[in-house]
Image (cartoon, rainbow, N blue to C red):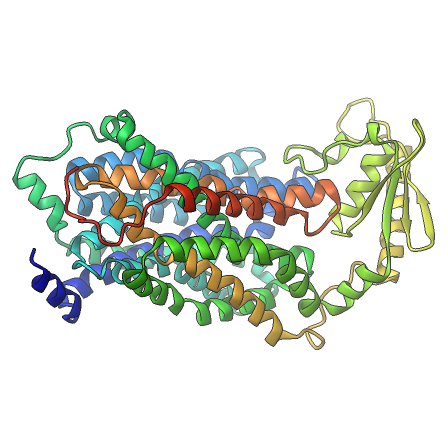
Amino acid sequence: MSAIAETNADERPMTKEEVKVIFASSLGTVFEWYDFYLYGSLAPIIAKKFFSGLDPTAGYIFALLAFAAGFLVRPFGALVFGRLGDMAGRKYTFLVTILIMGASTFVVGCLPTYQAIGLTAPMLLIVLRLLQGLALGGEYGGAATYVAEHAPHGKRGLYTSWIQTTATLGLFLSLLVILACREFTGTAFDDWGWRLPFLLSVVLLGISVWIRLSMNESPAFQKMKDEDKLSKAPLTESFGQWRNLKIVILALLGLTAGQAVVWYTGQFYALFFLTSIAKVDPKTANILIAVSLLLGTPFFVFFGWLSDKIGRKMIIMIGCLIAALSYFTLFPALMTAANPALAAAQKSTKVTVTSDLATCSFQGSPIAREIHFTTSCDIAKRTLAQAFVPYGNLAGAAGASATVTIGDKIISAPEAKLNSEQDGFDKESAAAIAAFKKDVLETAKAVGLTATADDAKMDKIMVVAILFVLVVLVTMVYGPIAAMLVELFPTRIRYTSMSLPYHIGNGWFGGLLPTTAFAMVAATGDIYYGLWYPIVVALGTFVIGMIFIRETKDMDVHRDY
């Protein structure tokens, strides 16, 4: 292509065919993200319905792990559907992934609960989450590749940025549907109304499949097919040859890992933080998140467009750096704005657990039940962790029972014994633990350490402003990344090569963030300690990306090398 032709392509308006490509790819991807995020948004209810056999803290962590399971399997979906997309075509791979996702989501809405069928319920739920993860693992790479291969030179960042809006729009749509269903079902939402958002997805599935059936194959893929240049072994070429594998590894560590933790911190962990730690009513929290997403989503397109002008790498790196440097400022400010009474109580009243540290277990274990914690240290910390009361730790004398100090009051924690059936505490221990918990929680409540957020006192403008900043950081790292990943790899193995680092980064580094951060908070008693996870990963990506990742905006997307 000549320089004049490239200039004309850059300046011409988007054609009808290009609009259709972007719309069809984006709409289907919005639907898939909607399906996926329903679970994340409803995690507290799902914990009660499917993991009620565990105590509240373990049940919530396990519910988040089931959420993360869908992310963990995404790289395998990337391998399966990436190979299919590079060998059979982008269009038909789209249809398979969306059908799997849609069917799995609908069935979640029909599942019996733990009370109805016992352990079979959470097992079936996890299977469906794995199917959703497999489907999503094949969806994103195909959508980004499909749009980028239709985009003219100089506009790939802009065109693919519309795909980047779909994750946020899918989350936004899921929040709106949840809010509407809450209004429709009222107090029955926690009983059966939570099923409606999952069941309604079948309507979106039908629309998405109908639209995707009308799509044409990618011109770059069709050209290679016509010339008989398709890869016969895309997995081997992608990961069995060091020349390409090296780029895959750098794309993971120097791009997608940091992008993922910034993305999930700014959207998912922010929601968990508001509802669980800041004790904001879920309905209010969802509305505040939805408003911030609505305000911030246009910046995906802005940073995609900007990356066509100044390059993709620097925008992503700056986003990772700012996020890492600002989280310990933004989240305490979010607490103060959302629940000023609770924030003030946390500053004025010091809580400490004094214990023989050798008797303390890891409180963030996702498989631990209440009866697994029998020492006084564990019982003390478990009580505080379940109420999200922040505390410090002091080393006590060896063999001494643990005590909880709240302000000037010192409360001794009991030791516990299991009953003869080993399925619960004995009668005396259960009574002692109940009395201890009551004393601790009443004392904490008296000084404001368990105060729910007062809607009248909440600074909603400041909350939205802080959430907006978090979303803008998301748009910086996420807006340009689809174009950059597409440009890093040749056409014949692009679907496979770009999908794996994207989904390991987002599925493992990002998908595990809520679970890991929540467990870190439970284990340490520091409500902000979980932020170290995204900060360290984002800083690592910044360093690796700045040193080893090249700029890609001027690379030929139709190359076969």
